[in-house]
Length: 176
Image (cartoon, rainbow, N blue to C red):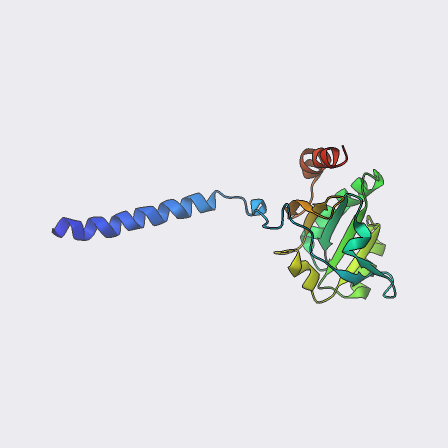
């Protein structure tokens, strides 16, 4: 009986260590989004460069498009930016930026300095649209199909490898 007193807590400890070890091997960028396969959230936001013009989700229907959530204060956004600029030159799809929890002045200055890969950038000053998209933190990138359904989400900086191995094959399928 005395031995059981120690075996049960030891077994519980071993199980907890097992869960911890398994969790440490997971890639946080592989967090599955509950929005994959569901319609993109409705939005109506002003353009970053023109507060008098509004873009809505409905304006994007009928085309496959990329939504990249970024901010001028985001270090990882700076890392991914040259890859987005290069990808934009291929003109494979419309690229929409979502300037997240930023100021209009800082966002515009950032694009002026580093280049603007976007067909348009939306201004999400309070972050509500980002929250509707389930954004954990910037940068995050989504591919949305012609019917407005989210087909892909990437957490973290987009790299040439992500473009080549994940985005381009998906675009081929969605545009077939």
